[in-house]
Amino acid sequence: MRQHILLILSLLLLPIISWAAAAPPPSLAVNAYLLRDMNSGTNIAAHKQDEQLAPASLTKMMTAYLTFDAIKQGHLTLEQNVPVSTKAWKAEGSRMFIDPKIPVTVDELLHGLIIQSGNDAAIALAEAIGGSEEQFAGMMDAQAKKLGMSATQYRNATGLPDDAHYTTASDLVLMAESLIRDFPLEYRRLYSQKEYTYNKIKQQNRNRLLWLDSHVDGVKTGHTKAAGYCLVSSAKRKDTRLIAVILGAANEAMRASESQRLLNYGFQFYESTLVYKKSQAVSSIPVYKGYSKTANATVAKDLYLSLPKGDYARVKATMTSKQPLIAPVEAGQAVGKITFTLDGKIIDEQPLIAAQKVGPAGFFGRMIDSIKLLLQ
Image (cartoon, rainbow, N blue to C red; front, side):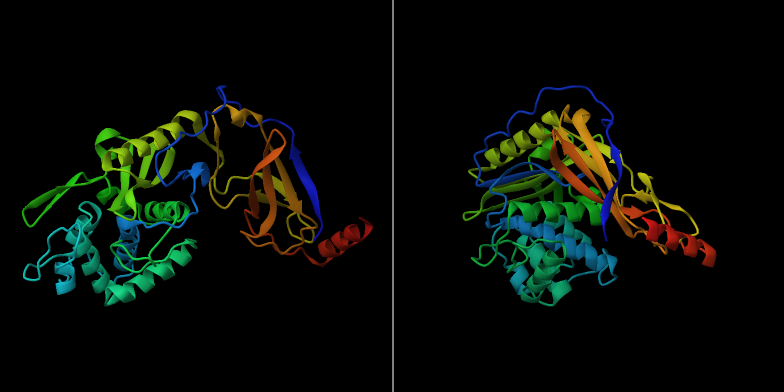
């Protein structure tokens, strides 16, 4: 179907306060990192973000995700007691200290998994959902593919070392985004808690940013000798949420400080601007052979641009439509695209969809439009 420009916006988008150009990203003493604006999906800063590395306990984000999903599907309840196997009881590494002789609920295990980073909690939940940790790892891989985590492979629910267990900073950002987006209530309820007591043993959350920055509300720490010190953190200031991934820091203090530097860089030098809200009419597109002569074009979700502060004032938008657009047109049908440029370079493209259905016109209306199309 031939394309032609429906509308070119020569006007600059809404101006904002002018700032100096963004400073270069900070140099961080880690193996890999990634900073993303969740609103727009824009990577603000990155280093070796696609290198496959050991995730350590960052693995437990997927364990939690599948647990939340099992609760949502009705396979588990928060109040349900979970059997504690010998394997879970004797798990090595960090633990919440569950005991086969003491009943433990799904909710308690989630607290132990997320706040205390308990490997025993991870195994108990994996066995409750998948029957065994090995089968659960297969479920983790399947979910990773659904989320677009194409460079990730799981072999356990804990993140304990295994050469065939790996991920990337890019995939970990997708994992964090999915957790926050798909289970917002559970995320808010659990991930910002600073400590948890189980079996009379109080343990603090290892995410030190929860004490250092009031805007930080998660997400997960990890550490093994192979992985180094790792942290996926998220902070929200006003309407902007940033997600930072740090892999392979030298120690716990460096993990926190480098994560804080990355988040501060994003908030100081970048801004996320809402250009169009979901279902907002972006343009009116001609429709042939329909009971309406036009259809409103819109975006499928809120459309944000994340740019260095001051750059948004120079952004231009160009909209193109699929022509001829012939009825019937279904609501949600792709009808064009919107392209954003900055200083002549494309910075983003998003599809435009029909905001409403346009059914076919009567016989004479269709005949008249057929003649118009022939004469074009």
